[in-house]
Amino acid sequence: MCYSGCQGCNYCKSAEECKIDDDLSGLLEDIREADAVVFGSPIYFNLFSGQFKLMEDRMYSFIDSGFRSRLAPGKKAVIVTSQGNPEGPAFEKAADDFAEVLRFLGFEMAGIIRMVDGGSPDAVLSRRDLLDQARSVGSSL
Ligand SMILES: Cc1cc2nc3c(=O)[nH]c(=O)nc-3n(C[C@H](O)[C@H](O)[C@H](O)COP(=O)(O)O)c2cc1C
Image 1 (cartoon, rainbow, N blue to C red):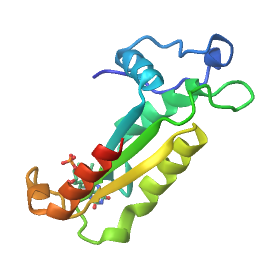
Image 2 (spheres, rainbow, N blue to C red; image 1 turned 90 degrees about the horizontal axis):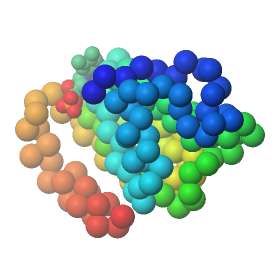
Image 3 (cartoon, helix red, strand yellow; image 1 turned 45 degrees about the vertical axis):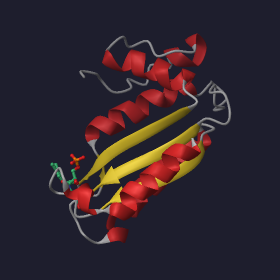
Image 4 (cartoon, rainbow, N blue to C red; image 1 turned 90 degrees about the vertical axis):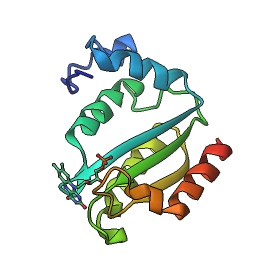
């Protein structure tokens, strides 16, 4: 996908949608319509990736001029993160902070799935606990 970050033009405060027309436009519309959304990002330099942050900032169009969410209440959200560091708590704050943003937008948090020591693509296959957590969170949506 090819997309840009929020330009802070505030068009969305009167028009109720983001003025930028790019590969994120359809995704933002999908999020508006979804009953549940799974958000995922690797940890890059202690935080969610830059690509993810560009998407997050574009969700500014979900907030009206009075800083109230325009999203229908009660949407469920799951966050999935993966980091190379084997220490679980090392970067928990990144997902916890994003969960706060989602709550502000009116999402109900259904779960946060945190992969550690995830440097190789198949590392999660040996994490039966996380696969079980994913199955359990998925069936709760
Ligand atoms: C640019 C970059 C920065 C990274 N920074 C961190 C980091 O700060 N802490 C960490 O534990 N892993 C870091 N990693 C490793 C990734 O978080 C890790 O490989 C992750 O499992 C990748 O997830 P993915 O397989 O979904 O892409 C970094 C990787 C890249 C490419």
